[in-house]
Length: 365
Ligand code: UD1
Ligand code: MG
Image (cartoon, rainbow, N blue to C red; front, side, top):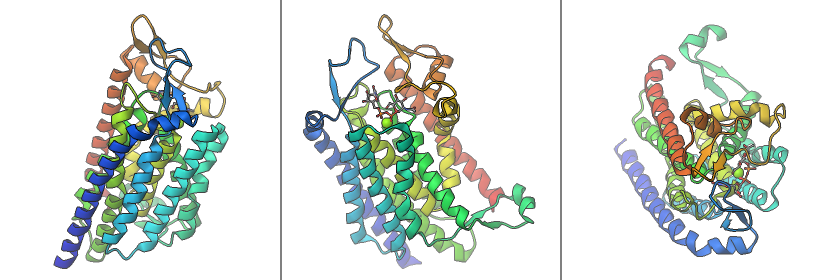
């Protein structure tokens, strides 16, 4: 046990140092390369800005490619310090995240239609589905056990694969459609990443039966391995994407972030907790359904209206997302204020999720 602890600390320390390097490289690299994106035609117009008629100022787009590339490099190098014996887990996560970055970048270049956007994460989750050899059972909460003849574990079989694929599709698209004001895409991701890290750190000395302990420890180390470099490289990106944005993160980043969360939650078995951290995205998604399925017309951008006189954003009632819903509750806000309100909501949901989890530990097991 003592040896294992020393190895854990070595692995965590290596991860910490690599993540710090990842932060520095991303931070230095983005300003140097961002204009190349504009030159290559990868740019967008900042829709919520005063006096910015289209054509006035081009903001380089898809800079999530830089943070994702540095992230993948970190994950590769981390391999040198790993003692872990579940190599196939890392390979599966690595393959799906990398594939997702490729498809996300393709989306930024090709500007794909909505229906293809839904399918991309399904394609990218294929490496996970074919490489996954882990269990297919889920833990049934005590109050629901009467439904399954009192059993604590329920084997989902093939349905577990469907569930993994659906979670990948949900996490990626949920982040991508909760977007459109400076700093929100990467802001929400950084906060969720922090919550996942907290969750894992709290679980590194888990409660449970002896044979379970080693498995849980491996799971949480694995998840930290995936999320810490993500947190670091995204934090560097958020510096440039925060209001007023100097770069846009692109669908590359949204898919990359969603897939990284999905992989860490699926392979470290805490997806029900991840969904607690995703409550704003869940609300946004459910509230969006009438527009997503076409009952209410869905414009290309579902953003609030910019009022030139007040400099504030105002809700458009037919744009059914959490951004507009928040503005209906708070009244008009500047873009910066709105992003701070939404990020605070995210942090609040994540904190509640962590508390609920602590409380649930007693009735789940
Ligand atoms: C999703 C949303 C769309 C939202 C868009 C913003 C759905 C179904 N789709 O579409 O409503 O408008 O994200 O990313 O909910 N932009 C800004 N400021 C920002 C970020 C983005 O003006 O802070 C604009 C820029 O013009 C940028 C464009 O949004 O070029 C990027 O849009 P894209 O990510 O391609 O849109 P979708 O993901 O398809
Ligand atoms: Mg997008």
